[in-house]
Image (tube, rainbow, N blue to C red; front, top):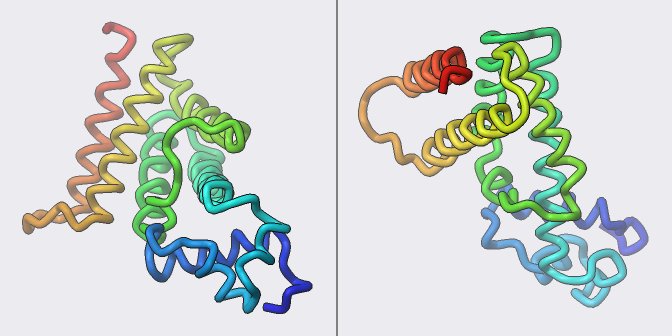
Length: 186
């Protein structure tokens, strides 16, 4: 990539290729500069430092996950929407394990808008269960923990027993759906 073609988006794109190929630990400004064919100081015109680049990468990944979630629930409601959301989340993390692990989980001002959209999608998927206010927020937290936990464990190869992972994930979805049906009673 020629120096003239560099932009913040291009730098993030190069960073994502490094993350995809080598994992988040391989992301350095030097590695990105090497991919771009420029000296490392040339990147400072586009990103302040490695920390900012990691946030930008995280924001891009969160945006991709948000699009997957949005497409998954589009035209669906209730149990069908929730299962589709869980399947989409799992599928994204499975197809892009390094990107998924590069996503910063803690709230950041730079990714707040995208995070709000993602939470909004989850809240919409939960609407059919009649949860409102703090009950809906608690349900989002539980749903996110279930989806994230399964995705991280699967990507790490932590499920070593012979039982089929699709069956395990279907059971998790069933447990979440069943739990949400009784959540208002809690």
